[in-house]
Image (cartoon, rainbow, N blue to C red):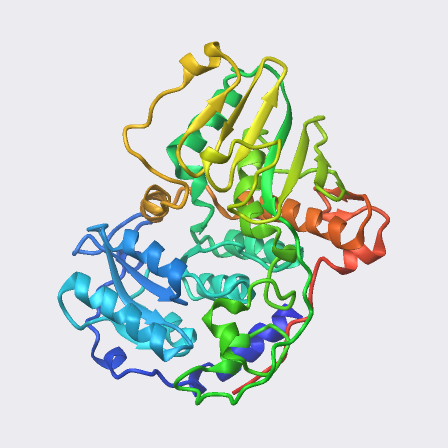
Length: 437
């Protein structure tokens, strides 16, 4: 199904027009990859970056990336004119010029041979397909999370990155934030003894198949509704969708919203358990969370929070901020979150803590983006590469499916399939909408 969808995309590519003549006059910076061996950089010593989908989160990411002197943002693609224009204003103001090219259709951006890498920050429905198309066009990819709406898309994405040899970084930036790095390092050093339990905070899952009331569809140049939907099922236009109100609707969202935080917190637990090449083998839902078990006997509890800023309940220290994780061993425990603080269970463990030189919080992408661009030059795997993403995202999706089906599921991480459960295996993929402009 996904192959037919990509064929449809490719067959209509040149029928789309750029929304700005800036694309025709944008300066052409020679891309690094045409100059020789892997890891080489352009004469200007700059990697060229294109942006696909620029909303609030992308603006945050891009603001950090603009500070890198060896990276030049040259183009932005978005289906909404207002967001394109706001992105151009941000980029042009930073460089004190008017050179940033704009596109309504991101495939026009991918056709440019002078772009080395892309930042993909569309809604969830587009992340995997746009990432794979970018890789096939010879671009390295930084993709916001969740990187795939389904288990199958996460698998296809990882396979595509391996086949094309492109550098991929998932936007699970907490792998590059000091307090989370320190907590995992202490676990790996055995400072809490043998770890037996991990707790990952996640949103309370939701499953909403409703439609908002239809509104008059704007012109394509204002909002390209068909392209906004992309592979997602068709429904009538409503302005709330394109302004961020798509979250929580099953057709557009990942894993009943469980991946909003789980893509980060489960990923950190995978890392702490040294399980980047595998996933839990059982998933059992309850009213308060989902209990997962790894083959090595470590338990992972996905703890439901009613709201991200509400009462954490007995499992959490609220002052540690959003996206908290907790690691428990037979000699102690470590808990940390987005505030940058860390709490440990004993004075002995407290002496092991190292205060971070800077007050970096969990949302900060600077170090994570730096790792991505450095790996473009070295061609080494980034810290949240495609295989790391595959297994942490699959674990989240499998947990969400156990909650949706209201029963315990057994998963084979090698086969990437559920054991003796046809219904669960049927939910590993979704049909992609066939469309053309």
